[in-house]
Amino acid sequence: MIVEWEEYKKIVEKLAIQIHNNYRPTVLVGIMRGAAPIIDILSRILKIPIAYIVIQSYSGKGIEDKQGQLMFAREISSLASDKDFKKVLLIDDLSDTGLTLNKSIEWLKNYGPTKNFIEDVKTACLWKKKSSTFEPDFCSVRLNSDPWIVQPTEHYEELSIEDIIKKNK
Image (cartoon, rainbow, N blue to C red; front, side, top):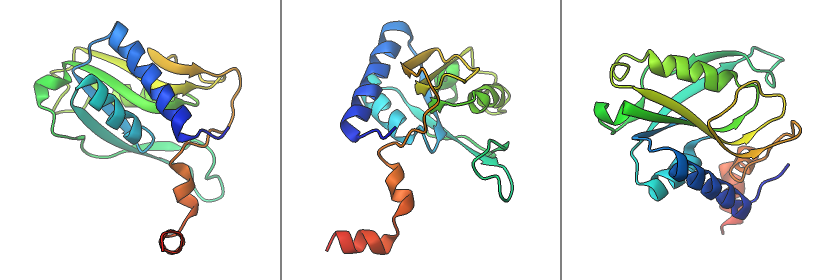
């Protein structure tokens, strides 16, 4: 399933409307890298500070396409103040298996600098795949299958800087 920018923006805007109508988060926490463009747009629409958590899934050699053990960065990256973490909206691009969102909630609630300020954590994503066991609080598209989703920024992974230089001469 290839998602173009226009469709992507509409899906993010739909998510913004759902959030606006049902929740008043005090900070948006994005799971990197998938949530980066989403929270950029949402923070501009909703006028809310943002934070990032970086997670990497390590599967080992030969099983790169499988969900592996999650490794969290040591720190949240944010200029939001501690009090902004009262009502957290945790955002990822999609709920594939649900593991990343579940583990991220657990990690966030135990993260030293902000754990005493968090009163509520809700979740949001653009897509929820059929086989996902996680039920996000907000979701733009609930899929009836488990397609591979190619988002508008992903084609850059296949390009080298030399390709981009050639293209832009």
